[in-house]
Amino acid sequence: MDLTILNTPFFGIIITILAFNIALYIFKKSNLPILNPLLIGTMIIMLIIEYFNIPLDYYKKGGDMMIFFLAPATIALALPLYRQLNKLKTHYIPILIGGIVGACSAILSVIFIGKLLGLNTVILKSFIPKSITTPLGIELSEVLGGIPAITIFAIIITGITGNILAPIICKIFKINHPIAKGLGIGISSHAVGTAKAIEMGEIEGGMSALSIVIAGILTFIIAPFLIFLI
Image (tube, rainbow, N blue to C red; front, side):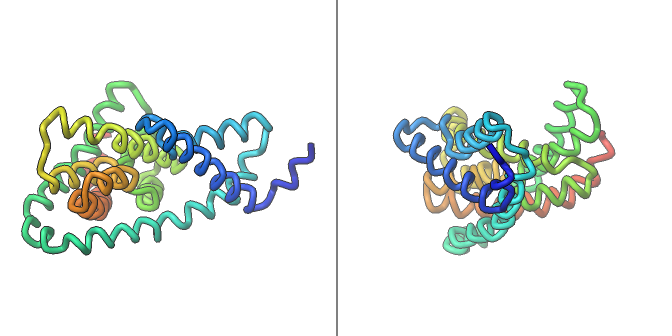
């Protein structure tokens, strides 16, 4: 089979949309959190590329175009945030403190666990932006000297984990305040986690969307200062 016909951006775009819709169908039919559409869709794409021995560069031409739309998609989360603007003004101090603590915890946990496991410096730097949204994470990874591809993988896994476990963790630790829920989910698991926060409630979704912005800005500021620990 001549695979050169797949060497166009349309291949990456079509296979991504197709894989996600298949994964979404599986998720809706099963209703199991572990069968997250992003996780299953990624696995479907990997299996297709591996089984048919398709060069990764063929997929990247369309895949990179899909990544381009991540930034405007993230900006769209400003809508639930705008609806909760009054709560932001009322609780701005705990929100800011929570953002600082969350951003620092995300970075320090990567450094300490990475050191414990003996990961090399480049891999550690690649994992540091794991808790911020993909467009910002890619930029920060390059600034720190990491590998963006590994950063994207870490961000996806972090988001899916937060999406699946957020309701369980809130229940176990009896986190009932909607603002606390939203902040925790958004700061730890960015946009993918925010999708779950929106399902939990409008306040949770708005605060989680806000947390994405806070976590991104603070991580960019704090990460270079904490990088000396590596």
